Length: 514
Ligand code: NA7
Image (cartoon, rainbow, N blue to C red; front, side, top):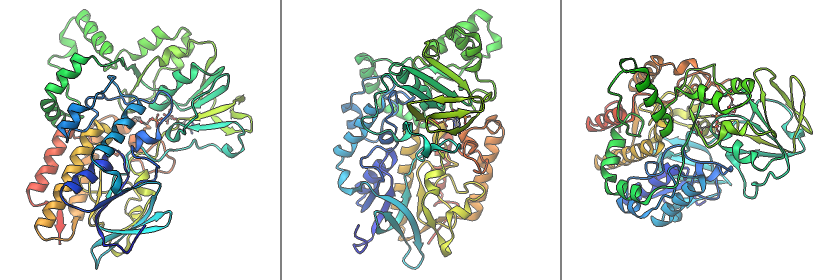
C-alpha cells in the first residue's frame, strides 16, 4: 500500500455490514476513505461463517439496510430467515451497486495503529506490509469475528479433518460416511448439527452447556407478505429504530396471571408457533426427544433463559432421535485432549474422521484487542482496557482521539438487530465527522469523566438484570482470563439512539473538540 499518498479522511477496518455502509456514507459526504479487510471478499461475518446450515436468526426483511429505499425495493429476499449464502449475495450486491470495491483493500489485515498528535492523524500498519494514514480511524471489526478454539491440548496431533464453523472453507461440505464430532452447542453448533447428521455415518455431539433453542419456523417468503412489507417499509424502519432491540413487537397488555390457564397456554402455544416464546422449551424437548435421559441432558438448567443467546433451529432436538447421533455430556465427562485419532474425555477416547469446532468467539473486544492501538502519548488500548472495555457511548475512547468503534462494547450491539445498531453508529459517526469539519476542528476525543459515567451507567443497567449470573460470552466468561464485564448495553436501541443524538445536539457533550 502506498503510505506516501495524501492522507485519507478515514480508514475503516473491516468490510462487513458496518464497513461497507460507513464507506458509502463517507464517500457521499465527499470524504476520501479506504476500507482494509483481511478476507478476500466483502461480507464480514457472512463471508467467514459458511458452515452448512448457517442462517441469520433475524427475519431477512428486517436484517437489511434501510439507508437506500431503492435497494430496499429492488432486493428480493426469498426466505423468512436468510441463509448465509443469501446474506452474502446481498452484501456483495451492495458493494457492487454502490461501487464500493474500488475503495476496499482485500486480503490485508490491520495489525497496528498509532495516533500522531502533531499531525492529528492515525497511521495504520498492515499485513502484508504497508502503511496508511488518515484523520479518522473507524473500527468496523465486528462483534463476533475472532473465533475461539477449545482450551484443550493436542489439536495439532489430531490426524483427521478439522473444520471451524467460523472459518469454513470452500469444498468442505461433504461428511458422507464419516465419523464426525461436533464440539459446541451454541447457535453455530445447533445450526450445523442437523445438517451434518444427514451426511455422517456417525455423529457425536460434545456438549458442555445445553442451550435454549426454539424452532425457527423458517419458510419461503410469500410474495404478498413481501409486497406488504415493501409498501410500509419506511414506517417499519422507524419502528425498528425506536424499539428495544431493533425488532418491533407488540408489548404485552396483560399479566400471565390475570388470565385463565387455558388462555395462557393458548398464548404460549401461539408464541411457540411464531417461534419467539421461550417458556415451553424444556417441555418441548421432552416431547421431541424419545429417550428421557437424553432429553434431560439436552435441557438447560444452569442459567436463566435469555442470559445466554437463545438459539433458533431447524430440527435440532429431533436429530438426537436418530440412531447414529450421540450426545456426550461434557459436564459429566469433560474433554481432556485431542489425540491422533480423535478426542479423549475423562471417560474414554472417541475416534473421529472429522471434528467440527463450533466453540464460539472472543466476543466484542477480541477483534479490537487484536490490533496494537496506540493513542495519545503512545498509550496502548490494551492497557486502558486491561480490566474490561472503557469508552463513551460504546463509540469513542478517552485518550484515543478520532477513533470510533462501530457497535463497540458497551453499546447495544449484540443485544439488538445488528443492522439497526450498525446503521445508527455509521450515521452518528458520519454526522460527527461532518460537524467537526464544519466547525473547523481537527480532533474529537471523549473526556475521562464522560467515559467514567458511561461505563458506570452500562454496568448499572446490566446489574439489575440476570445477565451477570450466566457464564456467557456477553460476560466475557467463555474466554479464560478475560475480565468478567457485561459487554453490551441493555438500555434499548431507541433510548440509546436518543442519548447519542442528544450528545450530538448539545455540541458533542462529553467530548473535547480541538
Ligand atoms: P457460542 O454461542 O459461544 O457457542 C460456543 C459453544 O462452544 C458453546 O456451547 C460452548 O459451551 C462451547 N465451547 C466453548 N469452548 C468449549 C470447550 N473448551 N469445550 C467444550 N465446549 C466448548 O458461539 P456460536 O458460534 O455458536 O454462536 C455465537 C453467536 O453467533 C450467537 O450467539 C449468535 O448471536 C450468532 P459453553 O456454553 O461455553 O459451556
